Length: 306
Image (cartoon, rainbow, N blue to C red; front, side):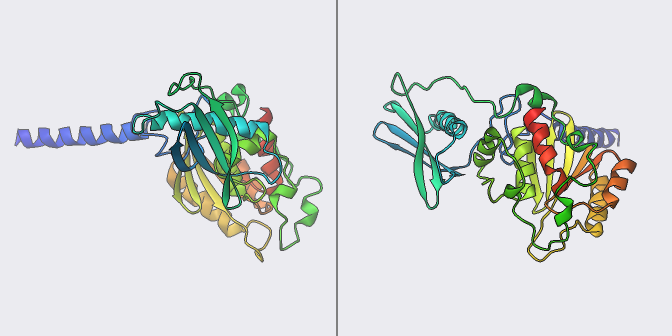
């Protein structure tokens, strides 16, 4: 009987150890792939979605599923995709021969076609330069950026925005938000077009740029983690014809789901306007923040400026 009890205890210990290992940030069980496209913490790298990879002659061609602007491609995005193309080739070299490659070419998507964005010439065929990825945001911002505190202390309505809260059809966010070029490049590198992005797209993309591992739970819910900080993220979309103000039922559902998630912090993101009740919710539980239409610019500024 004693050996049975000992076996049960041993199994319990193993199960607990595995659970702790999987929940521990930075453990070997949490990979970039598991994070659903998360940025590499400490490098500012946000892996761009790869559509195609080919070696043709002496060229290694990396086509990214990244929407390019209609006019000239910004230098930041050119550098970002070109350097990311080198990293893709670095990962592919273990399965594909690149001994004869003398140039790595990065391509992005413009409409239905892929067009050249930039290239890197190799001094010696097959020998790639060391990793050197550009910073999308200043290092001190990535190290200390807190997406919850970045929207603290906001007035209940931003000047010039609340007046349009009665409109049923909200204008695109791109008409109201100021996005630095480096941030636009980081979003495009994830396949997010800043001109058409929803509030959820923007916030998820910005958090990946800031080094948060982002895991999609369902169409409206994400788990994000950086270091020992875990955030429950809920997205409430706005459809044409919807009421432009965040519904109180959505606020209550988020509050309940956040409490049940046992996460350290909770964020609700929406392009809708704020109902008055969210300020009372935040005062009662400072772990929660509501990034509504009035607060999106401050969230962007908090990441960009520190």
